[in-house]
Image 1 (cartoon, rainbow, N blue to C red):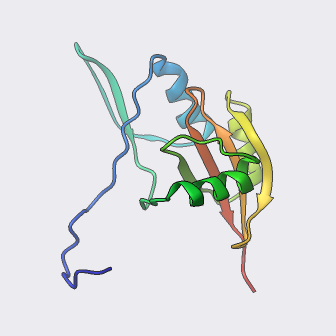
Image 2: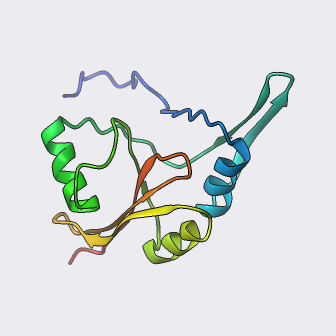
Length: 138
């Protein structure tokens, strides 16, 4: 599916979340996931911040595939049309940290057929997030 062009047509993926409880969601993503703001904006229009989260990819699933992934990670079709998947270096440490900061565990950790260690959680605003650790393959 490559166009053969050496210059990428997209240089960065940014996802913008809008919330009714800004401080709560900032606490979850910064303290809960251990992320640092890269930029913070405060003015007469309100507050915002940007968190750099490493390399970004976009996955596009049809409904059948999304159902299969949700079944594996959540036990049923549970996510909406958008779900984050965040690779973490230590799944148990990340899970302990987010549980201490108001996250809801949707399903206990599982080892996927592709060999990753995944857990499905939900942020304070209801966004489903898969935390995953790549398991060393032999």
